[in-house]
Length: 392
Image (cartoon, rainbow, N blue to C red; front, side):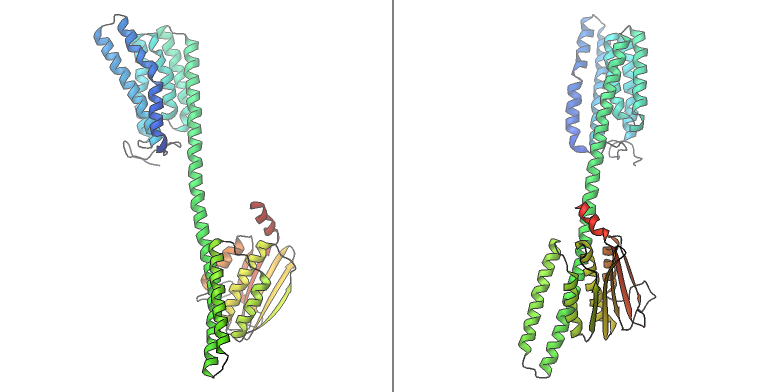
């Protein structure tokens, strides 16, 4: 909330800050002031002194200019709430003084004052301002001989209409701010998704390429004649990597847990790791299977890269309304206490996996495996798939 006063200060009203409608507000207010311009000619026709007519015209011009400035400042966000509130003081003085001085014809200023008060005061004070305008209408009508009921009804009706109009503007402004906030959140979420997919996809695929290139180099060193077949496999892996990147960019990548495990089995075999799979989960909801597939891919990639293991075991279960995935190896184990990721290049990957799993109300744990080695365990409620379908 700004504490500035005058041009350039930020507004504090909820409806301010939307400058696109300021020109229309000025035009509409000017058109609405047209009935006031008939007051001076009627005063001149009543043989009033010239100085009285001139003073009345100047006061009326000041009143009209103040109305236009208030409307412009409210819609353009150029002047803050306190400036509008301060400008309401001379408007109130003119709305009361001119009818008392020049007669009941000038009581028409009071409905204009009521409309102005609806946008000049803070939103929480609109109803008290309306009540004050109605009280001034009763006072002025009693002193000028005007119809009290008609004046109070008109003043109240105009004030209520303007209060409703302000409320609509405030709600529209809040809706626009909410839409902008949601758009920014969507962009941020998409960036996070893209960065996770790039890490998980490229990390695994590049590891496959690296291991296959090492195998090819060894074959070449020992004089193996079937190097061309290995080069063809490297080329195929490169094409597959490009396709995975395209799928990650478009956001349509859905993984199969069994396919990920079988793909990793080949990669781990190249790294000298034997894989045992114990899968008895049945059919999993698509969103749950995709999340567990990313977990399995990252975990098995880390086994190949960092574990120095000879054996790896993958367990997939579905029990008590939750899907469970465990990846255990007999390698060097975690370098940190349980529940913390290993240091090294895979840390960012585990952080991304934690975000994927917790987004589905699941849990990711890492630590020492029984008998030594490293264990990664992910559990996700099967109901997360139903919630995901309900939100799409």
